[in-house]
Image (cartoon, rainbow, N blue to C red; front, side, top):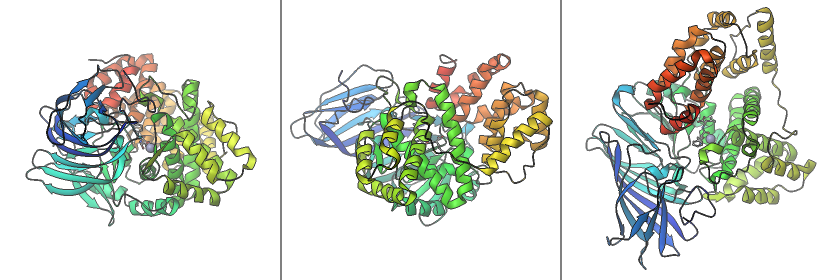
Length: 587
Ligand code: BES
Ligand code: ZN
């Protein structure tokens, strides 16, 4: 079976045919947990066949634009790839319509029963990145192919549908919604969510969608959205997507955020009550340029999306909340990078990846985010911020609505940023193509973090409790990370009594605290750990907590019991990672 020569994660014959537009007409069936309907693909073709990506789709019919049947075959299913759909085109065929139904186990889709949603109404959402769009739309599922789309979505009466597109028309009573995305986007940015959604406006171009019980808290937490958007525009150039809305998903959402164009999808765990986790929104907003406008050509170039975005996220936070906070975030990122490099095989610590034959998801680690961001920080330092900012804006302007490989990026950067101060290009190549953390990583410093390191030492050795009234979330995280990894349960009880950490409403702090508790048999936190794992499906939190539970012989059984009970509430993306951790699905 022939694979795409450019993109190891797609079957699509992108060198012969391009899909320029898709028209979807889909009906959602919550009882059967299926989406059924048609997609019509507009083709720009130079060959008599079309190869698409599919995964667990039932194909009912394939026709050309005039309604004539077209011959088609499906290749056998392959792990991580799904099935290729081969369609033989007629001489004049420039449109293909596929009638299909998704599987209840479609990788992208999570169906939530009314028992576990806030509103007690059903909810469904898709998560297409990296290679899961093919599980709900037969398409060229490669980030190198961009097209526009329109959609008609039919849902049970009373529910609201949103998509990564402009909202055209809706009839809530009949349950019919129409959408239109006029800017070309890759398949991994096509997104749909349906539930009992309320909307709160934040400015004339920003707003928040959430279930009724959540929408007010979300609007309060996200009130800086317009300010963020202005800061991003001042750094990167005009926002090309007209609106920026934020959808708060149920807690099972497997990620912190997903940068679906026009509508960021976000975990409810971003709502800490004090806006202390809004850097996540800055991150997803930054993707409106790095990722959504200028896109990695393959998942081997994933750092182009996430490294740029993490760098920009930090710059936005600096502009809005100051250098101190930005330095603390940068330092936490460097710590994450150290941890990632320690735990990953050397191959996976290069920026340019080689994921051929592997699940694209496997190579996606903090390396792309933090090593990428730190390399850009090094370049900023070498060329000076003014010159680097001009380059940054120009980059997004020159490549908007296009895709790049790492090599395309490097030759463009060399052409635009002239000169070779401090041998920067040799260093950059080292960052891109060699494993590990190069020695020239920019050193960041934060007086507040220095104080927290001392606080941690003092408390561990002499029991002196720190004064924490003025601490921000990042300081808590640094303090907890700076503690000795082995502590007596009584010591942890002392911290817990003083600061109520077990019952913090801040999910980032909770996760770091619980990891420490589990490693040290601090049992009074275990009920809260169970509740956390039973309600939250964000993979970034699930993985370290289950790993800690499994690593401690005293909690291994507890890990099995919690996972057995909670697995069905997690998205397939989190399930897949956890199944590996537990070595096979637990029934
Ligand atoms: N695009 C990513 C999420 C993603 C990555 C989905 C790879 C599928 C495959 C998103 O922008 C992201 O990075 N989310 C982070 C939040 C962020 C603040 C670092 C997350 O979910 O933790
Ligand atoms: Zn991201």
